[in-house]
Length: 363
Image (cartoon, rainbow, N blue to C red):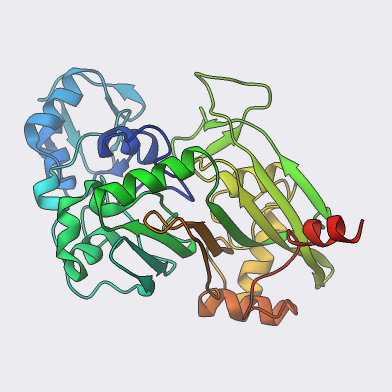
């Protein structure tokens, strides 16, 4: 069994990092050994992570980057057995020749494409990028099948990511020049990324969360806010949010919140909203201070993933310089959730952020 942490909305806005440097923040796998009794640690890890060479795994062990049952192990011949927990403290480089392979039959919609960019709608449940625990059947593999020329662009043109269970819009660059341009726009925070979140609690009409985010020291699969922290422990993160609508379900308050990202940290919206006592409906990781209410709602609606959707994406076209924008409705399960709660319409963008412009015009 494998548990891994993925991006909710991480972008490559640092100066063109390698895949490995991104993955170090992205995935730290934890395995429970099954079907092995007294086998060497490196052999078991190699069977669990075929996308990583055995030599790389051995070096990780020798460097003290692997724990067994909570204790660091540095001997590759250390014996492990059924039920042991193996945790990696550092993300190994995957074998790109194996992981970055075209694969047919991976489901995603193309909303727009031209010679420079592809805008895709990623469904919930699809991992964006190969990594430890998710070596293939990712969006990247599907992109390489449909667009073989992406093999010539770093990371197959991907410039930002969504978490496995978050649906919505992403842009992919078809050329190195377009990718460089889009990364620069992310650095300058001129890319519009708007998300819909369905949360427990009554959201304020207009609020901003500006709290650094880092890995939770008590859990490798969680992140948390570190107010006042800078640099080593956590990275700067800023989310702007507006309430779209409010409702109640069996006496439990719920809100429809639109979010815009100024940064793209791991699980950013989920961590920031939970910190405001607005945990997302269905979120299996961040349940807030009243987890029982969250479980009640997700069971009532049979909705067991975070209710988060990247509804709108806009940027300056890297070739023409023209501002372009796209909108996509949420996946069917989230659409049904919103309909059952009474939220809508969902077939068009919300305008809670545009109201600022209207107010200025009136003045």
